Image (cartoon, rainbow, N blue to C red; front, side):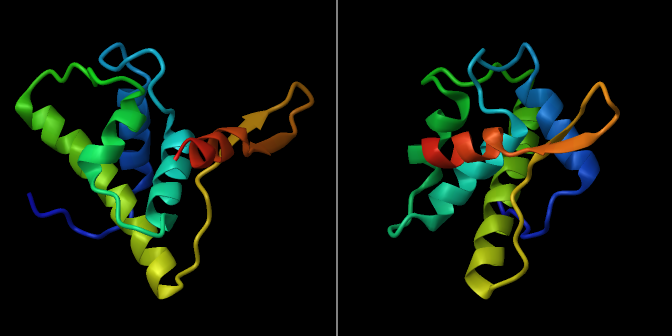
Length: 125
């Protein structure tokens, strides 16, 4: 499978997030912000790490998700690999890089950035 090196769109990030949080994945699967942090750590590793070695960390189990079809499996895996490749490209060529962090709206209406998930994912990686 040839994975293009293009940044995920907001719609693709939302789609991947919905899959990760669905009943098709193990209970402890990484959330989208944790996944971004995890993949960033994998990319920063001083020796290359092949996907077969880090994918169980995404699912947090050896079993992995229950895909509805081979097509869905390819689509989800392609999105994860594109995220990985985008992070690798940005860090390798010195592009602007920013962690994918979620925002929460407080009762006061103030919006705050939540870094905990990304940081946890990076430490897990």
